[in-house]
Image (cartoon, rainbow, N blue to C red; front, side):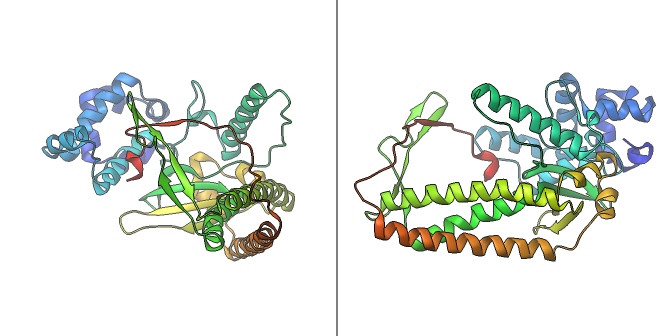
Length: 344
């Protein structure tokens, strides 16, 4: 937390902190930053209660009734909360806060650059895959950020950020458009199965079935082929962008009416090495690239995907034996009743 960050504090946050940890303001800046990056659980609970009261006062009573009834705090007020607390929990010039798991007993202060964090997370994931499957062959690190969430101030304005590698950004676009392209070839819908919605403790069973007017096997095979294609393209794109070593970032404005949003898309692992959490915005601006080449790559990949789906749909229509169906393990999926609350 830079020395002058304390000036950005809302009066409500100052008063809340005075109730919880008044000596905080006499600490050196580095101690305040360390505390904010790893709030003790007891202090965190007390601070949340105090700040909620400072920010929202009597509204809290009606919100408690709403929350108990399964509703959420209004988005406008949630944004206000995140804005108010960011100078405490974020670090550096921009009060950068990474809204991701950082590992056991680790904070963002343990990772000077994006690459330090991303590569550490990648190694952890690769080791986990190796433990689950001893025959798994690890792949080289080429940058792995994929739709990671963060919060920060950009030019002193509170902003939600998404962080991705260029390969991941392209893959996300393919994954999104693939569903529409398949739907255009084979219209289908999901309908509740006989067990959908059955309660089990605090969860319910998820049992939605695909209906495609008799083309279910064809649809299933096409979806599987498209999945294998897009997964293969993702791996190839990771290698391709890493080899090109453009060492840049594309800064895409994705703001909506009620909130500021930005997507930071990094070309390769060397770009991650060039960006520090403490000076995120400044470092990104120093290596920013025009988005035209990224947009052209999106169009090129979408065209290839469209051609692939057309070709393989025609092949399946002509050659698929409708009596043959891929063997799959049948799974029962249970979902907590409150699992989708954050997506409303």
